[in-house]
Image (tube, rainbow, N blue to C red):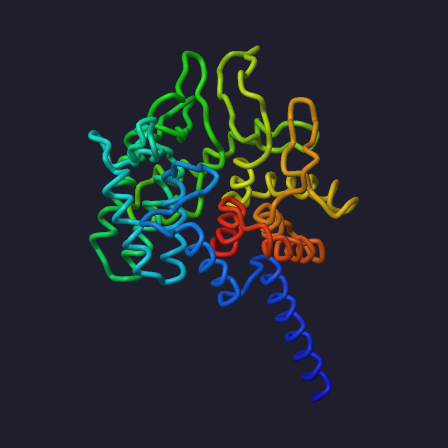
Length: 345
């Protein structure tokens, strides 16, 4: 009897350790280790009152502020959160007809710092609203929750439309509805945020928007059936899209935010084809001609690959490569992806 109990205990311990290893491979860093990358991010990209994506030499954008707010909330950095939010509210939330954010701010040709493009970027609006709601709940600041709700309401009002009986999320207020087409960016469908928006508002449209991502099953392209960075929706039978369909620096976020099995299986096949053969995965695929970039993916991509890959030990190897590359690959976007992957459940 005692021997049987020890055997049962051993099995339970084995399963527990397997669970721990699997999750560590999925999320990469523990919180204390991950925090050092947040501190680097803050030191490198939030030296001013706003988050500065240094790729945009003389400007910044609303997405960066959303990322900074989300990170500040997660790492319990109240001071940085308020600093970035105050700047964002005062400098970007200045559209006269809604609570959305002008997407581009920087130095104009006369040397003045101001909004350079008043159109919004929907992913940034979603990230900012999401961060405000999380922060308001964490720090018991109902005023922040109310600010988030105002943004959520305007996203619904201005940026969600119905097309062929499904809900579509526009990437911005203007410029994405043409005569016969609607341009969408799948990576703007931030499913975890939509779930939180629904829990807060009980508005069914957020659940419907999550379900509407099934339409992207029809736009998996190339031999790897990958989602492109941008998609043109059209009812024309012989429509030729004007955009070049590329899987790359936009679409990678779709796989971070969407864990549905068909998309995940496609990405797994893509990773298997390259990583198992040569220990690398290209950062871009030109889907129309099935051509690949010769560049290895950055650290942030490998973090996403590890999170979405379903099985050990490849998951662990992808995670290991992400951790190795992030030590020297700390560009704004790669580092943002790396941290996002580790904090979004």
